[in-house]
Length: 258
Image (cartoon, rainbow, N blue to C red; front, side, top):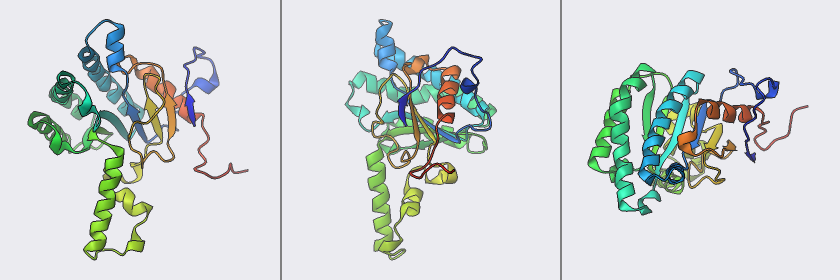
């Protein structure tokens, strides 16, 4: 499952063709490499984040056109606050710029915005941009664009466990009623119902780790690691990652059926 996918140049190879009948419902992406992309071009790191925002726009439309139901993007982790103040301030401005320029396109493409993470810790201007985008796209019925902002997978599990404990304390449930289904419903993706768990996780920039992202939901996801830095990731990169996914045999801990 943990294999790096290398792009092939053979357009005639049947194994390299995208099967539109086997598109993952939920794809999660760790958008890595903005800073390294900028440094390679002798630009400040923030230039990579700015270019990465343009990539988000392109991949959102591409994913929607493929019929993907949920696209989850790891935008800002609870650990990212450790970065230099100037970079953090720039990252907090990005959602404002993104939604100001892209919400009309989201609505045009029938894309609904969802955000998971502790939004209350974000600057007021960032919070307003997030809540405005959620409200403005609330009527959209197509793909869900799910941003993880100030998000950490371990904190998410801890908060779900606290909620379950409160329900026991309040007499709403018994301890033995706490099961996987209950905890799944208490995760930040609970509202996505049957689409809450990604079938495919993509990480750009060659790193092969999940960095505290969707720890519960990724239990049986397929992982594809690509060498491109996020600003270089494009429609073909997305399709090739999906082709790699389509070549996997997902057994969920069982055996192949004979």
